[in-house]
Length: 366
Ligand SMILES: [Zn+2]
View 1 (tube, rainbow, N blue to C red):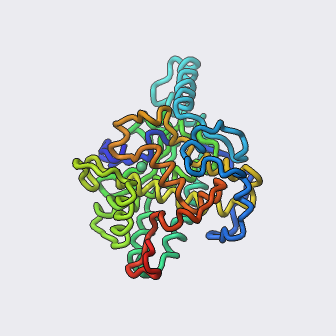
View 2: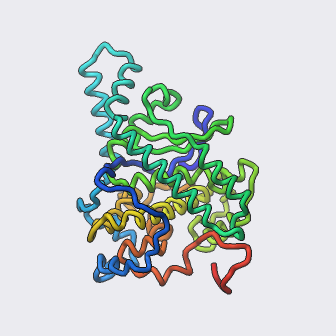
View 3: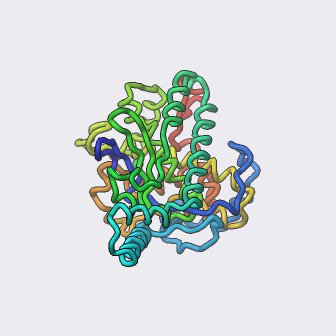
């Protein structure tokens, strides 16, 4: 869903499915942000025959999952939602006299464990730091100091809401068994990020968690949220122009920007998530070996794969670009991501949408 009002919240989710949780405990956080990839030519050897570099979707979605991302795997949301329902049934079976509230509380106790919560909090803080750093490093010709403050302030104000208590989600109790992440804005302007219980059962890969949280946090600063807050940034307008030019947003007669049939906010959130994932992979690359980094990169978006890519669910496409566009174009053409996939990044460097200054420093630069 793109945006929809639910119980006084404006809700925006990241995908037809959003799910994961993983153990990053085996890997310490990377020491610095923005490490140069210039010396990482060894990464190319991970994909020795450049297999699939023109078909990133196939590389991500058709390759069997191998357990070489040391932070964990990514399961299907169907699997994890089924598991969540199993847990519910088992609680009810063992405690036939319990009220629905008691059952919910026990479910939360079993699923939103300290370990699972800690992992999400940790990823959330890391994603915020990465986003702040990324915004800070943009030149004044992209964002003025005041614009940077406005953007970072919106990111800072997003509250991560994780049960217990189960009552925290009482306005949308179904979320406890869903493998979704949601960015929500109350009519009062308060913003929050919520994580479905099945997501905690499903996502074991740290990189998938990072992508998902970054997508949701990206919504807090997406062009439609910025517009709704009464702000406007010229750098956003240039970026949106690039999205349209590259068909990362479907061009439809019925499209109303930030309204019906518009994929803008979802494309932007994916694009933000890709930037954050790329920085995270840079930071972790020295801790990962061999094909681990390739698998980590693949896991970050593996849940976006479609069961039937040629016949995607049309209802998802109102607000989300197709899985092929999300994986092939927004993810797979990012120059840093391409390096981690073992693909030549140079071909696409000039064709990947980025924030650009008011006065391009290089003639013809995008
Ligand atoms: Zn979204």
